[in-house]
Amino acid sequence: MNPLNHVAIIMDGNGRWGLKNKNSRNAGHKAGLNTVEKVIKETIKNKIKFLTLYAFSTENWKRPKKEVNFLFNLLENFLKSRIDDLNKKKIKLKIIGVKNFSKNLNNLLNASEKKTVKNKKLQINLALNYGSKFELLNAFKELKKNRKTINEKNIEKYLQTTNIPDPDLLIRTGNTKRLSNFLLWQLAYSEIFFEKKLWPDFTEKDYNKIIKKFKNTKRNYGRI
Ligand code: FPP
Image (cartoon, rainbow, N blue to C red):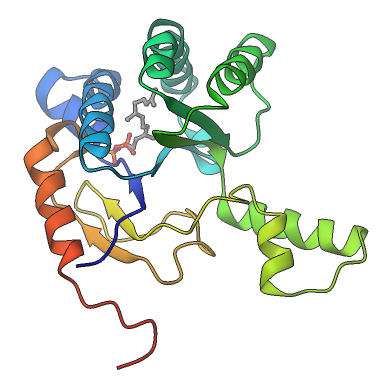
């Protein structure tokens, strides 16, 4: 059975769920947050050490301002109300992406990271204002600036995910088969599962079914 250390998730389908069920895309984001809570619980139950969630991409700024504001308010309320409990559960929060939000939100994100930095049960990497091409370009620029040799080890040192093992498993919900500028370097050998269900409809049972399938998949890494 394959060990499972790191799950990455593209939580897609909130908007469609919201429109279909509540006539509002934002209602879908709100419902999506419940799935986030369920998946965190199940990740701990499965003794998985890293969970990376794609919450906001560099391309998501192109959405209407009202939706962008709603998403960041949701995030702010989530952190304010849940960070103490996450901390009690020994969860470490790390933001990957560029933290160039409002001063308030930046402070809240930094404080949440600081508060949980020593926790070892589960590390949640929240991808916010994250884009993989930008991350790679930035790494190459840093290598050049610091006159470092271009090799895998040095590139990884300058990625936002430095010291985080590559995902073993990527799940994308929402019945769409693309990577959307997410962890393009880090997913080189990950097993990818595309799930038809929209993110708010994704259940513990669906998650465990994928985990079970993953564990029984033969991973070759180029060998036979
Ligand atoms: C993609 O669905 C989802 C997002 C861009 C936001 C993800 C946010 C959440 C799950 C809730 C907030 C999370 C935290 C951690 C506070 P979409 O809107 O692209 O769906 P669509 O493809 O149906 O339009």
